[in-house]
Image (cartoon, rainbow, N blue to C red):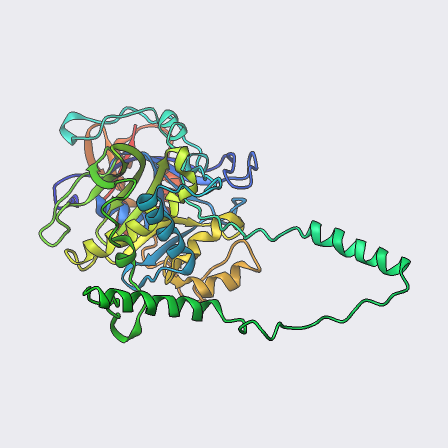
Length: 461
């Protein structure tokens, strides 16, 4: 009996293998990137949830799984515990920087975040025309065009180091002093020390505190109640939501709006009684500044997570760190959805690439886990980093006896779509005439796991 999703829809894929190397978008190695790939004509959200929990990821309708032992820059699936997340100091700076721009119109200097192209991570191939009207599949597009033309991903938060004074003027003055001391026999006079007629120096913090008290006293004289901020319980710092929803003055220079739309993807839109009100599927999150779109984020809302796909933005606003700002907004959005759907606990940031320093920023969204590439269990990132410092590839699960709980057990139960008919692979072998493809089907099923292999329809011609 065929297993079907709750809305009676199927996932239909074509598997392409992963023998050839492609250009790496991180280290630029022309043939160093290796991944298994498949073209998804249509996909249920539960199937995609199970796939990303086995190291897969989509770029458009192309779904790929890096071969971590072989690829030049191993990519490990990373997730953040959204409910436990606390913004770091750098995250708070980003939120304050954007609020300052909106309220005062001051665009900070700098080039912003470097761009990372997901499009170069996988090597696509041409799909076969398999969609049949009765299967209600998505329209087939050219996979090469879809992957190559997808927008670049703005994902990295690059910390800009404070530039220290060069001290060139000081060096010149010091050199002059040395020269004078050599030509003059008069010893330099001793310093006079602090001027006793002036008040002693005070710390800047004390000065600011005194000014605040003076302002409060003036306000009380004028009949205005004091504006002491309400302390958070147990002296806790501000939450992420408080930073994002911080009130702005009425005369702000700019207006930032946030809109969400359902967008086209292989994922079938679904609704569930215990799911979020917006439903499951792929969405565009649009950032509007004074009536114009400045950024668009693509996310997938899945049964247990919000998965970030990519973000593209207007280059004029690169210095606002919109890539990192959108990640913080999406974490807050995940927390909002969890109130409606208790199982939706995580925010997936895609891949963590320890061998590429500029991509380590994803590890700053704590607490977070990395996916073990052999047993597919989640391991706290702190433990994983210790291993990755010594080796590009690592098995994170320390239990050497543990294995893949959803490993392939019976290739005959793999579901296939053959001549518009759904059948198990064992039945397909009896009907199909021609060379055997069991090796390819076994490889595919071992990568997606036994459970997915019994639900997803693998197209065979």
